[in-house]
Length: 326
Image (tube, rainbow, N blue to C red; front, side):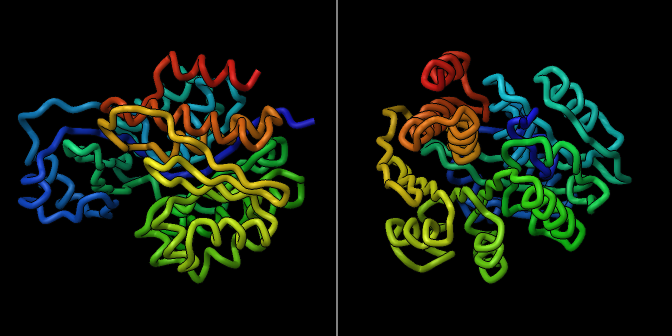
């Protein structure tokens, strides 16, 4: 029997969100809609640009976003990462404790990772990430017992950033494989797929049971349509969950393909939409729900989070998802 639902290793970040205009993107010479890895000096330049504007703060990091929403749904979760000895690090620890997430946080000699997110009127988010302590982990941080006891080990492509992180994820994957723990892989970002495609494809073939991507990430991975990409992933033995924006999503396994209808909403902020999609889908998997229900749960959480500023799902959406999964 598995005593945990979902375990993850990821960059432990604090997200700070601010409403931005198109001219802010231009003035800061940013590429809209992607994640920029920046040093501390550049991060402070961006933050200073918005020094007079109100901001919103929440736990960040792709897999952390999914884990905290799973915890809010009542799933049994565990998370491993590194933080600094600072106020942001303490806020991450406190928030995880409040959510009931089993925490494996180590402290590193650097500031806690920070992602400053610009949200433009069209709801698009442009991320500026200073990783700090968040990327300073290796195999020593891997929660082997928790992975062995979990139904799912979930990680994202953002972890393919340095040799220490890669070694940690590979160790976790071997533990998962040896203990019949499902492996869930979120491709994370077009920036990451573009740089790591040749490593991701064999990784998926060897370890992945569930793969999350969006249209652009899928194109960069296989250079085919979402439908053909879903077939390639299922031929590799994976369940494919491909997000198609306003067109909904395509979810597929060896037995069936389901087109998930989008949930109508007004887009305010797309931050963490993919992470919440993953959270809803994985919640359905841990509850042994059919593929169509897993897709519906994913759509409910993703549509809700984009309807407001900040990467947090509403209480109403959580209740809706819990009803669907019962």
